[in-house]
Image (tube, helix red, strand yellow):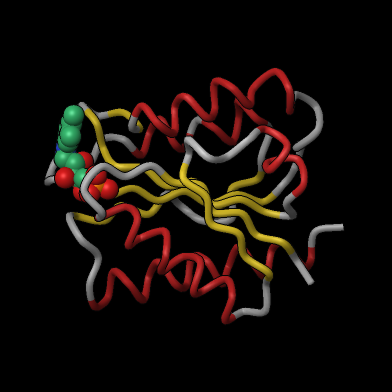
Length: 148
Ligand SMILES: Cc1cc2nc3c(=O)[nH]c(=O)nc-3n(C[C@H](O)[C@H](O)[C@H](O)COP(=O)(O)O)c2cc1C
Protein backbone atom coordinates (compact mmCIF):
# COMPACT_ATOMS: atom_id res chain seq x y z
CA UNK A 1 0.00 0.00 0.00
CA UNK A 2 1.41 3.40 -0.99
CA UNK A 3 2.08 5.87 1.82
CA UNK A 4 1.02 9.44 1.06
CA UNK A 5 2.06 12.30 3.35
CA UNK A 6 0.06 15.53 3.42
CA UNK A 7 1.89 18.47 5.02
CA UNK A 8 0.17 21.83 5.34
CA UNK A 9 0.16 25.13 7.18
CA UNK A 10 -3.03 26.99 7.95
CA UNK A 11 -3.86 29.95 10.15
CA UNK A 12 -7.65 30.16 9.87
CA UNK A 13 -8.65 26.70 8.61
CA UNK A 14 -9.04 27.09 4.83
CA UNK A 15 -5.88 25.18 3.96
CA UNK A 16 -6.58 22.62 6.69
CA UNK A 17 -9.91 21.89 4.97
CA UNK A 18 -8.09 21.66 1.62
CA UNK A 19 -5.54 19.25 3.10
CA UNK A 20 -8.32 17.06 4.46
CA UNK A 21 -9.91 16.89 0.99
CA UNK A 22 -6.56 15.88 -0.59
CA UNK A 23 -6.14 13.22 2.10
CA UNK A 24 -9.67 11.90 1.52
CA UNK A 25 -9.00 11.59 -2.21
CA UNK A 26 -5.72 9.75 -1.66
CA UNK A 27 -7.35 7.41 0.85
CA UNK A 28 -10.26 6.69 -1.47
CA UNK A 29 -7.70 5.76 -4.14
CA UNK A 30 -6.23 3.13 -1.80
CA UNK A 31 -3.30 4.91 -0.17
CA UNK A 32 -2.37 4.94 3.49
CA UNK A 33 -2.41 8.65 4.33
CA UNK A 34 -0.69 10.63 7.07
CA UNK A 35 -1.71 14.27 7.54
CA UNK A 36 0.65 16.56 9.46
CA UNK A 37 0.88 20.25 10.08
CA UNK A 38 4.12 21.74 8.83
CA UNK A 39 5.22 22.36 12.42
CA UNK A 40 4.67 18.69 13.34
CA UNK A 41 6.32 17.30 10.21
CA UNK A 42 9.93 16.16 10.33
CA UNK A 43 12.41 15.77 7.48
CA UNK A 44 12.34 11.97 7.85
CA UNK A 45 8.59 12.00 7.12
CA UNK A 46 9.46 13.28 3.67
CA UNK A 47 12.01 10.51 3.17
CA UNK A 48 9.72 7.75 4.44
CA UNK A 49 6.61 8.47 2.37
CA UNK A 50 6.01 7.30 -1.21
CA UNK A 51 4.48 10.63 -2.26
CA UNK A 52 3.86 14.00 -0.66
CA UNK A 53 1.24 16.74 -0.94
CA UNK A 54 2.28 20.19 0.28
CA UNK A 55 -0.35 22.78 1.14
CA UNK A 56 -0.21 26.39 2.23
CA UNK A 57 -2.09 29.63 2.36
CA UNK A 58 -0.89 32.52 0.23
CA UNK A 59 1.15 34.93 2.35
CA UNK A 60 2.14 38.06 0.44
CA UNK A 61 2.45 36.06 -2.76
CA UNK A 62 4.57 33.31 -1.23
CA UNK A 63 3.95 30.10 0.73
CA UNK A 64 3.15 30.56 4.41
CA UNK A 65 5.92 30.68 6.98
CA UNK A 66 5.01 27.31 8.53
CA UNK A 67 5.56 25.39 5.31
CA UNK A 68 8.63 27.45 4.48
CA UNK A 69 10.08 26.54 7.89
CA UNK A 70 9.44 22.82 7.30
CA UNK A 71 11.09 22.95 3.89
CA UNK A 72 14.04 24.89 5.30
CA UNK A 73 14.46 22.22 8.00
CA UNK A 74 14.07 19.41 5.46
CA UNK A 75 16.39 20.62 2.72
CA UNK A 76 19.80 19.36 3.90
CA UNK A 77 18.62 16.20 5.71
CA UNK A 78 16.67 15.00 2.65
CA UNK A 79 19.12 16.03 -0.04
CA UNK A 80 19.58 13.19 -2.52
CA UNK A 81 17.05 11.01 -0.65
CA UNK A 82 13.77 12.15 -2.20
CA UNK A 83 14.78 12.36 -5.86
CA UNK A 84 11.86 11.67 -8.25
CA UNK A 85 9.36 11.23 -5.42
CA UNK A 86 5.88 12.23 -6.65
CA UNK A 87 4.52 15.44 -5.15
CA UNK A 88 1.57 17.72 -5.56
CA UNK A 89 0.93 21.16 -4.12
CA UNK A 90 -2.12 23.25 -3.35
CA UNK A 91 -2.79 26.57 -1.71
CA UNK A 92 -5.66 28.76 -0.66
CA UNK A 93 -5.70 32.51 -1.12
CA UNK A 94 -7.81 35.59 -0.66
CA UNK A 95 -8.05 36.60 -4.31
CA UNK A 96 -4.45 37.27 -5.33
CA UNK A 97 -3.12 33.76 -5.58
CA UNK A 98 0.54 34.24 -6.45
CA UNK A 99 1.94 31.65 -4.01
CA UNK A 100 1.79 28.90 -6.64
CA UNK A 101 5.13 29.92 -8.07
CA UNK A 102 6.95 29.29 -4.80
CA UNK A 103 5.30 25.86 -4.50
CA UNK A 104 6.04 25.00 -8.11
CA UNK A 105 9.74 25.70 -7.64
CA UNK A 106 10.01 22.86 -5.11
CA UNK A 107 10.10 20.29 -7.88
CA UNK A 108 13.43 21.66 -9.01
CA UNK A 109 14.85 22.44 -5.59
CA UNK A 110 14.03 19.08 -3.96
CA UNK A 111 14.16 17.14 -7.27
CA UNK A 112 10.60 15.90 -6.72
CA UNK A 113 8.31 14.94 -9.60
CA UNK A 114 5.17 17.07 -9.79
CA UNK A 115 2.15 14.94 -10.74
CA UNK A 116 -0.23 17.83 -11.48
CA UNK A 117 -0.22 21.62 -11.75
CA UNK A 118 -0.31 23.46 -8.42
CA UNK A 119 -3.94 23.75 -7.38
CA UNK A 120 -5.13 27.22 -6.39
CA UNK A 121 -8.28 27.61 -4.29
CA UNK A 122 -9.89 30.87 -3.24
CA UNK A 123 -10.94 30.84 0.39
CA UNK A 124 -12.51 27.79 2.08
CA UNK A 125 -12.89 24.94 -0.43
CA UNK A 126 -16.46 23.87 -1.28
CA UNK A 127 -18.16 22.07 -4.17
CA UNK A 128 -15.95 21.77 -7.26
CA UNK A 129 -12.86 22.88 -5.32
CA UNK A 130 -13.28 19.95 -2.92
CA UNK A 131 -13.69 17.59 -5.89
CA UNK A 132 -10.52 19.02 -7.48
CA UNK A 133 -8.57 18.58 -4.25
CA UNK A 134 -9.83 14.99 -3.88
CA UNK A 135 -8.77 14.29 -7.46
CA UNK A 136 -5.33 15.73 -6.71
CA UNK A 137 -5.01 13.33 -3.78
CA UNK A 138 -6.14 10.41 -5.94
CA UNK A 139 -3.65 11.33 -8.65
CA UNK A 140 -0.86 11.42 -6.09
CA UNK A 141 -1.89 8.03 -4.68
CA UNK A 142 -1.86 6.50 -8.17
CA UNK A 143 1.57 8.01 -8.89
CA UNK A 144 2.86 6.71 -5.55
CA UNK A 145 1.77 3.16 -6.24
CA UNK A 146 3.27 3.14 -9.74
CA UNK A 147 6.60 4.71 -8.63
CA UNK A 148 9.23 1.94 -8.20
C1 LIG B 1 -0.09 37.33 6.53
C2 LIG B 1 -1.08 37.04 5.41
C3 LIG B 1 -0.77 37.44 4.12
C4 LIG B 1 -1.66 37.18 3.09
N1 LIG B 1 -1.33 37.53 1.80
C5 LIG B 1 -2.17 37.22 0.78
C6 LIG B 1 -1.80 37.53 -0.57
O1 LIG B 1 -0.74 38.09 -0.84
N2 LIG B 1 -2.68 37.20 -1.56
C7 LIG B 1 -3.87 36.57 -1.30
O2 LIG B 1 -4.61 36.27 -2.23
N3 LIG B 1 -4.23 36.26 -0.02
C8 LIG B 1 -3.42 36.56 1.02
N4 LIG B 1 -3.77 36.24 2.31
C9 LIG B 1 -5.06 35.57 2.55
C10 LIG B 1 -4.90 34.06 2.80
O3 LIG B 1 -3.98 33.49 1.88
C11 LIG B 1 -6.25 33.33 2.65
O4 LIG B 1 -7.21 33.91 3.48
C12 LIG B 1 -6.09 31.86 2.96
O5 LIG B 1 -7.19 31.14 2.48
C13 LIG B 1 -5.94 31.62 4.45
O6 LIG B 1 -5.72 30.24 4.65
P1 LIG B 1 -5.84 29.58 6.08
O7 LIG B 1 -7.30 29.70 6.51
O8 LIG B 1 -5.46 28.16 5.85
O9 LIG B 1 -4.94 30.28 7.00
C14 LIG B 1 -2.91 36.52 3.35
C15 LIG B 1 -3.20 36.16 4.69
C16 LIG B 1 -2.30 36.40 5.69
C17 LIG B 1 -2.62 35.96 7.10
